[in-house]
Length: 199
Image 1 (cartoon, helix red, strand yellow):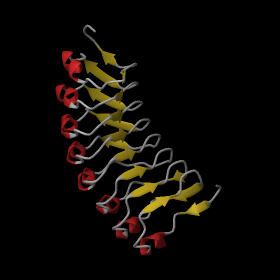
Image 2 (cartoon, one colour):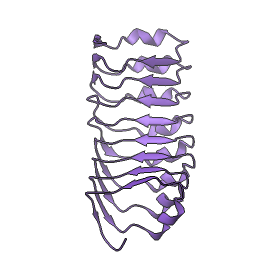
Image 3 (tube, one colour):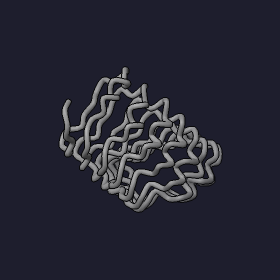
Image 4 (tube, one colour):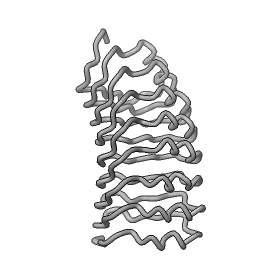
């Protein structure tokens, strides 16, 4: 649709709301912190709008959230370490925003996470080795950021990984022989980095 204006803070009064889907409109302004009132919320999809500001700290108090889609907006700031509180999280998709800072090590607490999509932001620092805690992870997309360091050895213990996209970063070091452990691997895309060593 072509809905415009801001997301009403009064959504916070809709205490039985389970799915909030506003994707593909012309909504602007911030994510209201009153979202934290929605204890039953399992899915939020605000993708493809013009939303600005940060992901509010209160957002992470929605402990039943399973699916988060806020891609293709103008979100800035960091991903809070409080992401650890989203223990039911299955999909976290923030691609094509302006998020900065490092990838929180506390993603390692999101043990139900299957898809982590942070492509096209301004994230820096290393790939956290706590990713190895995510036994259910099938897709990781960290492409088009400013990520540095190596691909950690622990990364290769995610044996259910099917799709790995880390292209267009500043990764260095080698691709470990432990890549053999990724027996479900379908896509492994590391183009445009500074990786060295042998294949």
